[in-house]
Image 1 (cartoon, helix red, strand yellow):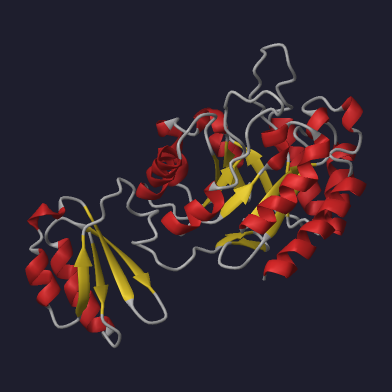
Image 2 (cartoon, helix red, strand yellow):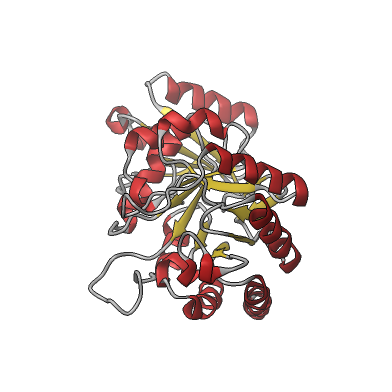
Length: 333
């Protein structure tokens, strides 16, 4: 249930109403807008007399929210969320390019790529330390050593770092990681979601391999229900019957999510297409669709990459992509 307060409501009046609602054992989420304040009521709202609440002098309107996701719902939070990741911002008009290799392989590799993508305009460095792989015989990442190399790249370039957390046992190692990625395979690992929800770190939540938008938003709700509101949704393609690409990139989810939720939306065309030649056109299309950021895999030597070389761009090609994306963003601005 949400209650919209009238313009001119004083903080004292608002706080008095919030206290009354909390005495009914309801959680109250307060969203302050430029003109109005929205109170999101979470819990057993059947005990709330809607007519009584709506008749109060400071209340403009009251309505029930039918969607199962509440706190990530735009009805609860009309304004776009803006997420700070180190020196970068995503959401509410702030756009960020996230770039780097699929896997951290060496100090020279990660620092070299980090410097190149920063020069091309990337705001956040991505890189895999722990890698979920379909085959148990494939490269699984450098683990703790990979995290140390990411920290070295951050120190060398100033770029905040984003890397994937796969296992709760590793959570302590991520204490100074700027943004934690929850991968597609873990989108419905609810114990993991609840634990990162207890942190104060930005969470990049990738869409599951075959997940609906509602299932995806419910996973974000798991994180937010534990107190962490710093969530960024990442579309990385879904599994369909099509075999021409690695996955099917669902760009229609960008405007849909912006309508349903206040959370920023990032698009990953690298994992979606699986082919380097398709990454740039789909990145441009994602920008045109209104994405708040784009995540690109960049490797200094894709032919010899230990992971996903076929979809990785060279630094020069990434620089060209970044300039094209900016042209599109300027055109639709």
